[in-house]
Image (cartoon, rainbow, N blue to C red):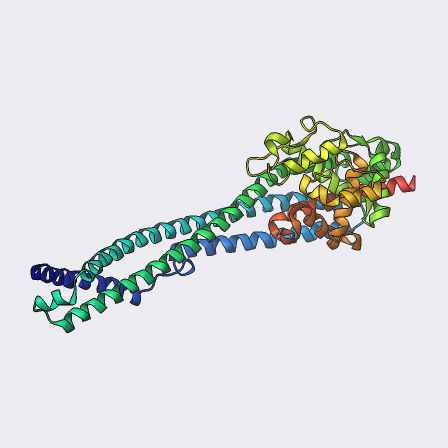
Length: 443
């Protein structure tokens, strides 16, 4: 029996030296949190990307101000060419900025993955150390005081070692808890970053669609220069000819996502009715509907079974179509892109969970219930009401642009540079439609 106790003390001495060393390391060099663990190379790369991104965003703001100022000027060849140049440059810079932002997020996610791996390894090592100490203390606890006395060992030394083991065990447990807490916090931060990266990828995908718009703008610019031969007087003659062709404007088809195209004159009539009820400018309503239809057309036509969020929207969609007496399998919705969910309905591209929040108000305006998201007047009304809630009825470029951004990205994200392209495009479309409205009113 005494031999077992002597063996135990030998093990205690060996283990205690190791454990004390481990404990000292963690007490002197505490586990750093993620914010403190960024390596110099990663931090430097991140700073470099942030600097580049900041410069691009400044350049985008310059182009946006040029665009805003030029749109307020009277029509001229110089003015319209400058608008095309500003739109093309702003869209190009915006795509570059998004690519940089994604690189920055990818760097941060990679760093967090490395931190998680290091923390997991450290936790594993501490678990092994803690298990070893626990095995030895449990063995120590199994000896009675009589057995220790009979072994002729020094009692004070025995209890001193016993207290040392307890201290080591508590220290290791505390360090283990800190490591686990740091690991969990890092995991949360990594999840947030991955969500932001998904958002950035979504925006980059949408902005890739802008390239088509950029090419269209370049073609229009070439056409203008070819027709006018760069001469202001010739350009003004072309503009006047277009202004006198009011009949062509009225007959021009206004494309609607999820519904049949209607003549511009009809679209304007609906927008004017909604404007009277909401206080939101008719041209702005047309701009939002046109932008949503452009984006929706690019996404394509989907089906609720495969493209709609199964919990948030699908049950509501089935209820909406049931009340309208429609077959859900034949009603067009936006197709699910690779980065998220589709399922937006009709010209206003409302998802079912948002549409249902506006149903009663829409019904009050249009005079029938339930309203139909694929019906142009109902869809225009929904857009007008949401834009009014977003602050568009205040009027003015800035308020209308912000309302459009809120329509697309929500209030939380509306002021983020990543979403600026949507507001710019809506305002450009609104300006285009306002010119057409002005022509019709003069004729």
